[in-house]
Every structure is written in C-alpha cells, then in structure tokens.
Image 1 (cartoon, rainbow, N blue to C red):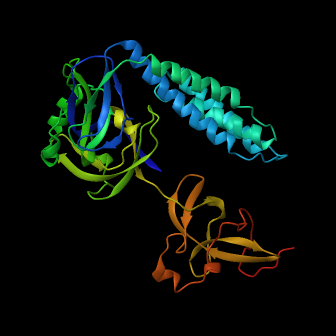
Image 2: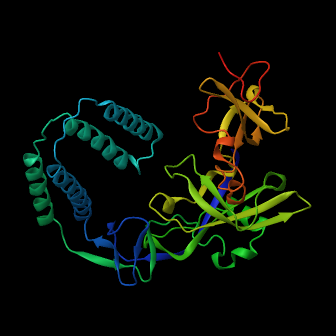
Image 3: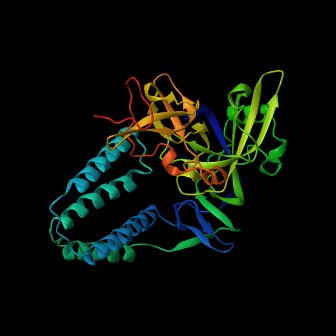
Length: 373
C-alpha cells in the first residue's frame, strides 16, 4: 500500500441559516436530509426549556433501547469469548475517546460498550429487570415536558443536508467554479482566518450532490493518479472512517513542481459534516494478492515463475504473477484473483498457487512430480 499524507480542505456548497432569538436547539441531527419547509431547530425563550428538550431527546433514545431489549430472547451460550473480545475492544475505544477529548462521539462509544455488556448478559442467561428503569425514565420525561416553555420553529429555507453551527469558513472558495481553482487560491484558503460568526447564524444547509476535498502536493508524488479515478482517503485525527472519492482535477505548476489535487465525494454523514481543515491520508496504490516468501520463488524449465508446493507426497510447480517485490516477500497474483476472464479461459486454476497451498521455502533438486518422503 502506497500512501500520501496531506492537509486537506473540505469545501461544500453551504448556505448559512439565520434566526432571531437565543437558546437554539437542533430539531434534526447533523447531515440529515431536509426539505424546503422542514423544521431544523427550535428557539426557546429560556435556557432551562432548551436543556429540557435535549434531555427529553436522550430519554426517548434510552426508552427505545430498553424497549428493544425487552423483546430480545435469552439464548444461553457456554462460550463467551466473542463477547469478551467485543467488550475489551469497545472499552479500549471508549477510553481512547475520553483521552482524546473527542466528546462529540463519546456518547456513541458509550452506547456501543453498553450494548456489548448487555449482549454478554443475555447470552449467559441473565434476565434483565428493566421495568423500574423504564418507569423512572417515563416519569422524568413527563416532568420535563410539563416544565418546558413555548418555542419558535426555525425552517430550513431550502433542500439539502442540515449542519448545526457555523465555523466561519463557509464559502471560503467559490464552490460553483471549482474547475477554475488555482494553487494560490487554495493556499490562501488554508491560511485565511475564519469570518466572524454572528449570534443569529445558527446552522447551515449543504446544497449540491457533491462536496470537494482540496490539497496541494508535490507533483512527483502523484504520478499514479489520473482524473476520473477513485481513491480511498482516511482522516486519522477524526472518527471518520475511510471514504471513497473521485479525482476531479489535477492542476500542476511546472515552475514550482507542485500540483493542486481536488477530489469529489457524494458520501455524507454526521462525522463527515463537521470536517473542514484536516490531516488526511490518500491511498495512492493498493495491491492485493498472496504474500509469498522470496526464498520460495523459482523458475521452472519453461522459465515460468512460481513456487513448488506439497500435494500429498508429490511436489508440484504452481505458477504465480508478481505484483510487488520487497526485500523479504512479494505480493503475487493469478488470473483468478484478478478476474482476468480472457486468461482464465486458457488455464486451469490448479496451475496457479492457491490460498491453502503449502509452498517449499528451502531445498535442492526441486522439480514437478518429485516424490517426497
């Protein structure tokens, strides 16, 4: 796998949503698709009512969770290894979230740990007593509702993806003229200070089907990239997983040896909606195949490259095609791994190395058909 570390700027077609009043609470989650007259937030007259709404939303989620648990059947299993492994993983992830200070996804991590523990309890035959918990939550919800004042609805004003909050970098580059961006435009955007955010700017609406990722790189680092090709991009400093994006534009400056690289992507979720200026990793090349020790690779009498494998008590020569060679091992492929239909019709699968083959690393006088003691 060949990767490239870059600073990536995320650009969307964003329209700022304004509203009068204070104590704003979102009515929908970030990255939710909304229509023209959909309600995206509420404005409350007092902070207590706003806090009540947030807690009521949490209670609703908890009630849904416990109601689902009531309908689960108890299945007793003697082996809890898988459950224990999941609990340890989720516990490690939760601890890492606490240490990193990424509290935006801490609640999600907490829920995953709780689910893992609950899953083990039900698998070992423990019956969960939930009626008191549910009653307590229902009473709390009713009390909060009676104490919550009136509110005004804030409409989207258009169609698109809703994102709560404004960061001051909206429209820092001209979204509609992406193909006219130059290296100096993106450099200026990277170094620019955010615009002032007023109190009445409560969120934004992302229009457009695509959003863009722009970075500046050394031209000689991207000689394998082509416009129109897809690549995988990850963001190691965030909770966002890998995304797939298409190379929209490569604009090179011969005098400086640098290039502007712009990707386009149509994936949208809550984590992606908060990205703006992020450290990113672009996977430039990725090779898949079998990993074979270089000491085992030989040529037969026909000068075909392969390895000798053990089939019962007989030595057989299996062909392979080298896709990558390192100091100690190579990544090898076959027509069947590549789905090469034309070549697959002319050869047998047994002629090539397979996933369960045991190949010979060291030895002398190796040949196809040799009987092994």
